[in-house]
Image (cartoon, rainbow, N blue to C red):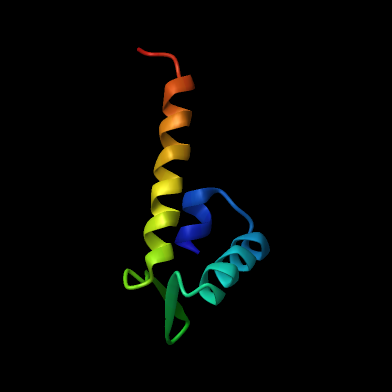
Length: 68
């Protein structure tokens, strides 16, 4: 639930996107009781590509923000 609150998303959409990442072996999850722990699979070369893409997207957002 913390992930959903952190990204301000809805559970069904967030869960569907996590399932895509899991099918591509970019993330691995582990269930402990009712808690689900999600970790990046750093052994998968595609994980690094996804992280680089996210950095590029984030840097583009920061360029459009007005400087204080």
